[in-house]
Image (tube, rainbow, N blue to C red):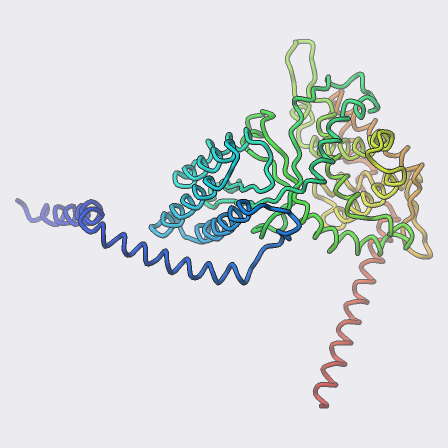
Length: 469
């Protein structure tokens, strides 16, 4: 045997011993080590669970005893997923976390009294070990909506090895409201401008909307989830839309309500409420089902409108869906699903939401869509700007007319698929901030600086007082 080959053989034998012999020969020792690590992690989790708690009032959710036990399993799984995401790659500890999560999911499955939920949780238990979630995603679609739910899926970002996890408590009242809106969609569609030119309505294509509260959210800026998301990529309609009520309400209370007091007169700011905000979001999602979907050309080749309008489609579709959603309010009022005066609240809340999107980023697709809408309402007289108070005022009757014009123009452009016409609408004069909006924005900026300076002065005075003492 030559000297050059001896080191290679030694290295080969060494790796063979480590990778093959150790797991079998020292399996008992490995198990003890793993058990020790598991106990340490359990102690840490027990402390963390006491400190963190949940963001949902479980008592108000009226969960039965078995559901409460399931929730305990789910919160422990969430903690494990967080640790798994913090791991750099799939090492032995990562595998331990996956196995523990799988055991907890099996335990949650045993607690379930529903066969379909039991099957879903068992499939999820197997999927979290294999890191392939296609089986559990299809099982989740088949199950009926439960009071308590858990979703685990890969993060949508490219090259990400992390997992997303959602613990959900269904909000019965708002979920029933969404179902009622879907039940009258045919009526709503019947009153839409250019109804006869749109694709035939098929209620079976409507994806269910579930309104839920998120327990201890890991992502506090995510308001909605379309799941399974691979259904969107493949173009199928087999998915559900989940709207996260408590995260939306926090966003509304922290940003939209305070903003309403700055841009509206006091009387109209009182119209802005969370119920109207959530109603508008549900209607907006449903309105995406109303529009034209494809163009039929002379060659009988089916062309999707989004392919024809290219980069302008998203912005145009947002305008059309928003305007169509507002236009359909009248149907809901007529069917007693909304009170007679609630349309004013929805309009006012919608306007504040538009301004928030514009101030966040006027050049983004959502910001541009919002800017075009608000400019249109200013031009039509639906929204006016008071130079003295530097606040906006809304005229409800003019708003209804302005919304109808927006719905008509956006629907016509989508129907024809005319790229140049879409360009005129999206990149024309409506895409530049109106003078009133500039004035309003500058006034808000000035007030913000004044408030900031006032806080700094107050802080300075307090410091001087403390120093004197």
